Image 1: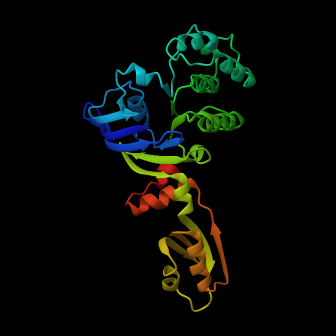
Image 2 (image 1 turned 120 degrees about the vertical axis):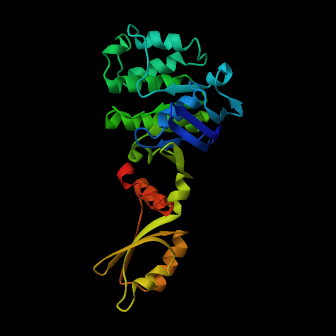
Image 3 (image 1 turned 180 degrees about the vertical axis):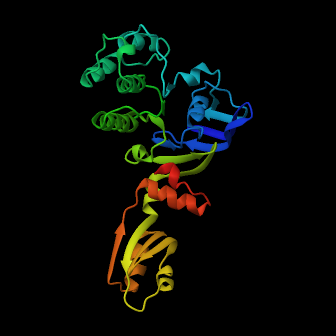
Amino acid sequence: MIEAKNLSMKYDDFFALKNVNAQVKNGSIFGLVGTNGAGKSTFLKLCAGILRPNEGSIEIDSKSVFENTEVKSEVFYISDDQYYPSTYTPTELMKELSLFYTKLNNEKFTELANKFELPLKRKINTYSKGMRKLLFMLLGICAQTEYLLCDETFDGLDPVVRQAVKSLLAAETQDRSLTPVIASHNLRELEDICDHVGLLYKGGILFSKDLNDLKLNIHRIQLVPQKGKTKEDILKIADVANISQRGSLFTITVRGEKEEIERQIKQLDPIFYEIIDLTLEEIFISETEVLGYDIKKLVL
């Protein structure tokens, strides 16, 4: 497990992270969302042991990461702009990495690279951005580490490759309890793969919850009530987070168990009602509005 306790990182007078407390459980895919400058890259670098925190601690399996070779050997970090020697081919880079990542599966890497049609004899500096992203993702998967830290992983990948990479990550997580942490500025990239999602906002974790719990406990309802029923009647049906009206149609966001909400709606005997699944963006907007934040412009 990755655990941050009162974690702060400061550059001169600017706090990239301030008093962050977070947990990433083993065998889950954790999505870290935030705009540019929110602190995502800094958090991943602290997890990888590249940076030493100014305050607080970051531990992996109850061990400090910084200057700890044993822990670092179980962490593969893929930055947004990954470094590689300019003259190297993918095969040469794989051999270099295997000196540190001793469990790196060369045969598996070659097999996957061939499936994705990556030219292994070409120099990496001739690759496109998307090809480089894919290369390092395959290396990260084949390194067989327990933790895979990905900064803007899917940026530059075409839609087909993106879905294939997500499938690979999901399979590895299930088969050998890999724990990926995926940082992205785009909620849409994370919705179909992550088990747990956290929102970094101005250097702090504003929001961190299990994705299934979120989706099961917040719902959107469109409802046309019988004549004589008022907005006040509708507000009694459940824990209403938001309500709007256009003509006779009410749109309501509510929290709670779906079955209980539906039971209360039926008691109103509406002319029409429909329960609509929310996107991850809509859930985040609703939840953060309750906390007093307006993040529509950040996630849409």
